[in-house]
Length: 274
Ligand SMILES: C[S@@+](CC[C@H](N)C(=O)[O-])C[C@H]1O[C@@H](n2cnc3c(N)ncnc32)[C@H](O)[C@@H]1O
Image (cartoon, rainbow, N blue to C red; front, side, top):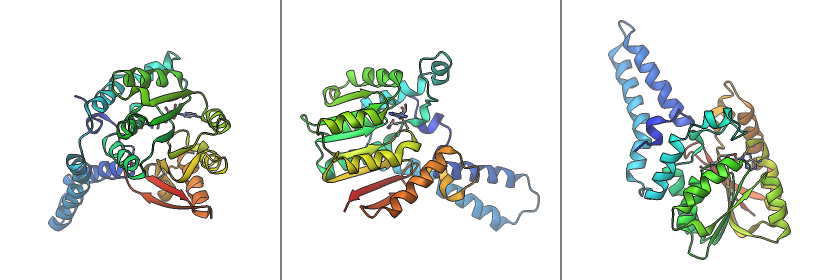
């Protein structure tokens, strides 16, 4: 089986740190007369960093076979080719899958909030949606918004092979349109997971708060709020890093909410309305 750890390029601050420490260690080996204690500290630093995520993965509840299959299907898809052939219009890539630890974290949040209605903005191939659906009761529902029809179909095919298919409704189109429709229908969600275009985050958060989409005592979960470390290192900061930095400052200054940022994967912010 292909695992994310085996094949994905590093897309989280921690995995980038591990890659850089490994590079430093390699470079240090070719430098003559380096102090032994320097080399030992470097090697200990690498071991500390490199071992953490595999260790967390090994002691976190295992992901279901359905989720493993979904990851494998996502990893073996040629996303570059899909883009070149015009099946997808966005630069979708296998690294977008949230994966085992984040998926299990989301499942825990579903149980902790006892959510029965969940909104996801940003479905991709459906890992986080299926993980949360697995934690929902039989009469629970997750509405997942996805702009890319190819990704939406891909996810739908993965869900059809599971016992949780009937709990997942996919809204294809720009999330802002889906949000308007859902608000017009008077829908409310106890858990809202935002994981789509980073430039849209402020508008999504503002919309779900201002239009009553979040149920009283509901929880909003935002993905990628550490964006590969770019918001705080400012090194080679790209459009997504800038957008996330703006979003983080917006949340930090928003007196309507209380929030905490967790360094899980690429950073997850939990937000509740005061
Ligand atoms: C990071 S991926 C989501 C990963 C997914 N939550 C998971 O755990 O595997 C982001 C997704 O958001 C979608 N997206 C981007 N812009 C969007 C928009 N304006 N409306 C809806 N979906 C959008 C992309 O097509 C992509 O599939």
